[in-house]
Length: 69
Image (tube, rainbow, N blue to C red; front, side):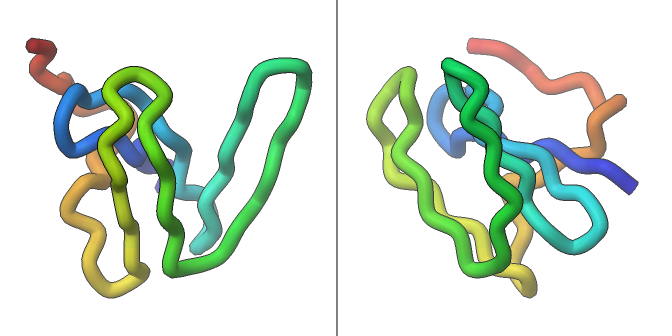
């Protein structure tokens, strides 16, 4: 099952959780598959976000509607 990792403050998409690894994509074709724990600074609001394998509170299923602010 594929899930989205979104910013805890502005809900901007940070990455996708696939097959137990985190898929990150950036401009200019840069793509990474990383393990856990993962830390990222949101490009939109500069909030520091952390994702641990055991604690995935900021991960939502891809098809789930996410409220916008």
